[in-house]
Amino acid sequence: EFNLKRYESLPQVPEEARCWQEFLPLWKEWKAGVDRTQELSREKDRLLAAGKKIDSPEIDAIDVRVFEQSLSNRNQFLMGNRKLKELIAINVGVNSQMVNEAKEAFLAGRRLMVLVFLVGMVAMVSLGMVIVRSITLPLRQTVAVARLIAAGDLAGAVQRFPLLSKAVAHDGTIDEKRLAGDEIGDLIRAVVTMTGNLNALVGEVQKATINLVSTATQTAASAREQEVTVN
Image (cartoon, one colour):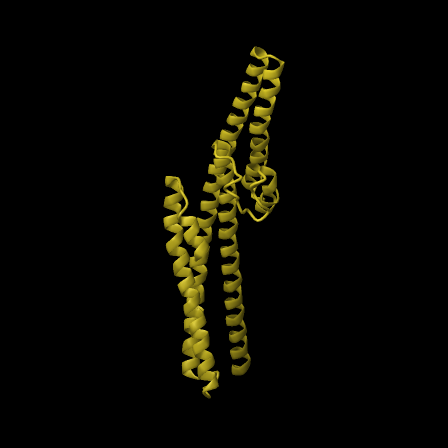
């Protein structure tokens, strides 16, 4: 929930905002359904502990409700998963646009280097090389990270964080005092923040999937036990 709120607070393009507003209710409804399924399972355990037989009407009624709720949970999960994939695709598209902008910035920096070389003295050329290197090197690293994100390799992108700037740690923590206060610094901050939030969002979905599989497994096991008891 915390990561969802963090992602929601980030700037979003209109298409991303629309997709997010469609995804959020599906996520909340699915999560509420999982909670209801778990509560029904606990209610069944309490009845069994109180002495109710496995084939009693009360237990049968709970099993039916668990089964129906599980089907509803599955449908909500599938719809939410489709929206999540759409949301990720939108983020990848935005990231690709950032890659193009980074390329344009790189080309502009290279043109600046050529101009300084043509009109300057040796000292000016040397100074120009230092300036251009300070621009192009972070841009190259940022483009490399952005390409990894666009390819879906978030782990690889995180591993390259320290190459973006000395102000960026391996875990994505940014030392604002050391980060450049120009457009390059803003670009690095945006790429690092977006990668962290995409990682967090994917992690939430993975945890939710594990909970769903666990609930489904418990329901299936309960159904098998009931079938064995009836037979």
